[in-house]
Amino acid sequence: MNNQTQMNKRLMRMPEVLKLTGLSKSSIYDRIKAGQFPNSVPLGGRSVAWVAHEIEQWIDSQIAQRDTVIE
Picture 1 (tube, one colour):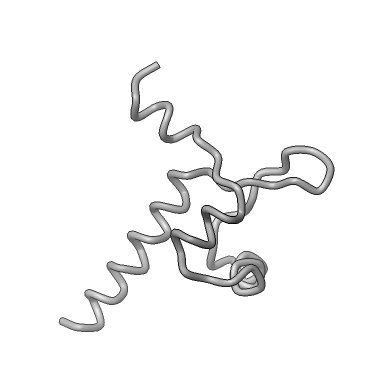
Picture 2 (cartoon, rainbow, N blue to C red):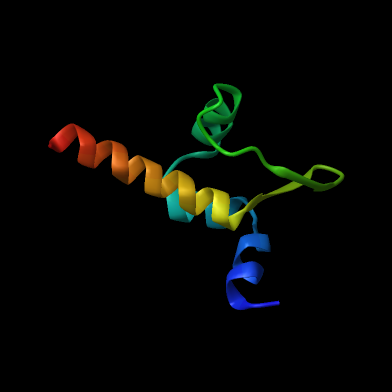
């Protein structure tokens, strides 16, 4: 398995998602409900995580939206 494949399968827990996105927990869950943020992956019990690649794509899309507005 190459590094890119491993990166696509890496899961991120909430503290890392919060740090990367700058959002609060409630904002993340509100955006998930509105279909504006990637869904979490259930890990069992009440534990969830997010696919790292999906979070990175979401961040890229936010940057692209900003760049579109500026132009």
